[in-house]
Image (cartoon, rainbow, N blue to C red; front, side):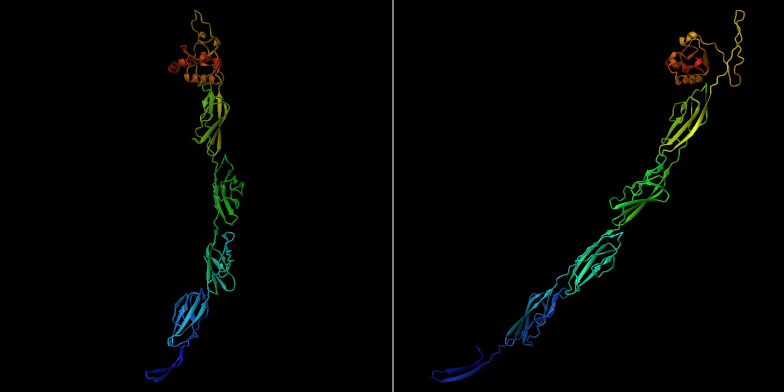
Length: 476
C-alpha cells in the first residue's frame, strides 16, 4: 500500500450510499549507516576499533557489525576487531524497521623484517671480532638489538664487536609495524692451545747426544715448533719435533698454531748418566817356578749382571771376561769394566812380576865307590844357600822307565804334587801340548805309574804329600 488518502463508499440494498475518507501516512526513511577505521592491524596493534560515527543514533536504533574478526562491541558503533577484512555495519530503526548498511575494509601490515648474521672465530690472534649482520633488513624504520656474553660495542647496530665466544642473538624490529625477526649467530672459540708433549732419554757415555721426542704434540702444516734452552745445548733440529742435544739441562718446546696464533709450551729435563763403574785390578802377583800361572783378582770392581769385564795383557790364557783371569806371563794387565746401562767404562792396571831364576846346584865330582870304599859323601858346596832353599838328594830314575826320546836327560823330582801339577800345566799350556802330552810318559811316580793319564788318575789322587814325581829337567 502506498501512502495517501483513501475514500471508501458504502451502498446498501436500497441504493443508499455513504462515503468515508482516510489518509495513510508513510514513514520509510532509512537510518544513516556510516563505517570507518583509523589505522591498520600490525604486530604492535593486533586489534583495532572500528567507527560507526555518522550513523543514526538514538534509542530507536540498533547496530550490528559482521566480519571476520569482531572481538567485542559488535552491537555498538565502535566494535573491536583483530582480523583484516571487510566489516559491515547494519543500522536498524526500530520505529519503522528500516535498515541501512555500511562497509569498511580493515588493512593489516605484519610482514616481518629479515634478520641474518655470520661471525668469525675468536682466536689468540683475534681476541675481539665483529659480527656481520649485513643482509638483515636495513633502513630508518628498522632497529637492532644484540644480546650475548661478550658484547663490547655496537649492540644496537648490524655489526657489534664481541670478545667472548658463544651464541649471540640479533632482534630486528620494523618500527612501522612493530614486527620483529631474530637470528642466532655462533662465535666459535679457537683459543685452545695446541698439544705440546716431550720426553727425553738420558745422556750417557755411549749416547753423548740424544734426540728429544716431541711425538704427541700437535702436527700439521699450520703448526710450527721452536726449542729453547737456558742451560743445555741444541745441536740441530731446533724447529722440529725431534731436536738433537748434547748437554743435560731443561729444554722447552713451544708449539704454535699459525692459524689461530695460539701456542703452548712444555719443558723436559734431559738428565745425564755418566757415572763410571769401579775398576780394581787387585794386588800385584808374582809368577815363579812353583806358580807358572796364576789368577788375578778384580773382586773390588763393580759387580753384577749390568757390568762386563775385559782384561788385556801379555799372557791372558783364560777368563779374560771375568774378574779372575788366568795369566802366565809377566807384565802389566789392564782391566776395563763397562757399565752396560750407560756405556761408561773404568780401567785399572796391575803388574805381574816373575821370578824364575833357578837356584845354583853344584855337585863336586865324588870319589869312586870301590870295594874298599863302599860309600862316599857328595859335596854340594857352591849351591844356593839360605833359609829359602831346601835340598833333597835322590837317585835319578832308571832310563829304561821312560821312552827312548827322553833317555839321557836329567830329571827333576817334585816332592810336592801341587808344584808338579802347576809345572805340568805350564808345559801343556805353553805351546808344547803334543810334546808334553801325558801319553808321552813324562810324568811318573816312583812306582812307575803314569799319574798324568786318565787311567792313573785314581793313583794320583791317592799320592801322599811328598810323593816323588818326575819331569825332564831340560823342560822344567
